[in-house]
Image (tube, rainbow, N blue to C red; front, side, top):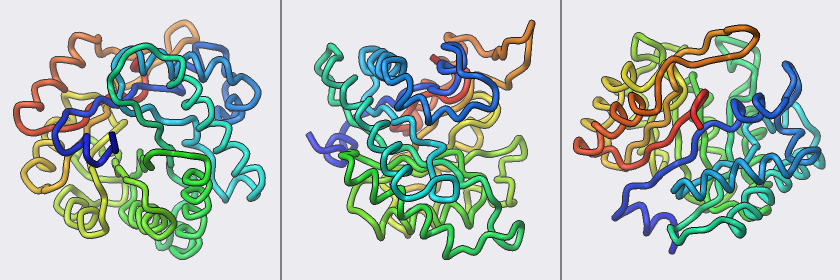
Length: 275
């Protein structure tokens, strides 16, 4: 079944954290997690398989940190292909019969766009385009743009994907406690922009836990005519005895997120600190 067709009539379950689980598996501070797609593929395949078997319909490849500002074309294509191969291997090995899709995961470029930084909008679009084309060539079923905290960078990423391939695209932004992005925009700006540019689903991820994001998601649900997604952190991280821990329990997380299904939430998963 095609993803757009499935999305019309079903709740779609996303996966949870990847980086948190890689850290638990030994990823060192400062070590690029995307390198493990090649150096430790068995770890990624196990994580992805566990998510599919837990009921995830969409599992994101370990490509969040792969972009053309960090890597040359050949290395970018190699890392993205390896990341998606790990998801597809996990999908083949996983038990269960729910529809399962492999997502190219696209995160922020790591440089601020003008006027907040020095990166030109056109250069950001070009960088995102390279990742989108590589993901489409490597067999992604969709593109998931996530953890964007700047309206201009969000727009650049979505434009790049729409110009580079015809895959479904989800767009998710990271909001602060004031209900706005770092660049100051709120849902009233984001929703019409993302719908107008052709996003298939829009919503929120990361941030500071599900309970605090409920008002933002409710505003999305009031404004949006496309499916809305929610993929929050398990609360805010803190360090105990050298380990990063999160305060929200699985039961609390599930209760807060599932309370929004009755209001129209269509896609749900977890971000940092979830499993």
